[in-house]
Length: 284
Image 1: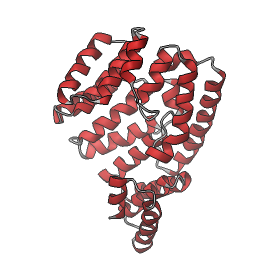
Image 2: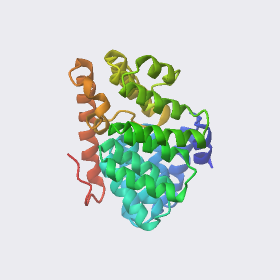
Image 3: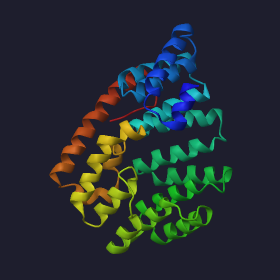
């Protein structure tokens, strides 16, 4: 109950309650995968990442063919920016339940952030077959196309998203990203409006417009606030090195510092992955 309440309201006081009750559940039934998953998320929300790894790895050992186990591990790894490894667990979950639309959505982002655009498109098409009116799939398709420089196709997909969700900020941000790619600075900034660092488009738009200081500042703030405020590493190492929109930042000293810090973090997470049955997980 407390987990559900937190997920709905994101109330900070629920962190301690979640952890307390999942610790109790684990003491009563340590062999229950769900208790270990819940404990893992409780540690994650408290930013006790190593303890979270241990809990999720224990859940995997208890029931490696459980859909929730694979889905939750994938989502945990995705939140840390371990996109290649998250993809492995999303695939395992799809073997169990190939009709889970949310996996195609989250899994597509993992592929996009790795620069695997063809794989992302396959997931998005499968998701659309399950939920043809889900505008988020169109937003992701547009982002996937924009990263590849397919401007006209992206414009069409954004129009489709607008029809499904009129007035969507994400549609405006997609169009701002397109305008930035086309060098339409004033239009891009106007469409971006009051979007925050929690929208990935913002840093990309600034970088594409040559506003390097603003882009780096946005990335720095996103890294600092992401885990605490939205439960996600917003600009992890894999995202930063595979994003063509940020290529112009490569020689910026502060960006290099952020990139190196994220690389070290990624390497630490790869060491923690050894707690899992890491067949096919890879990492470098």
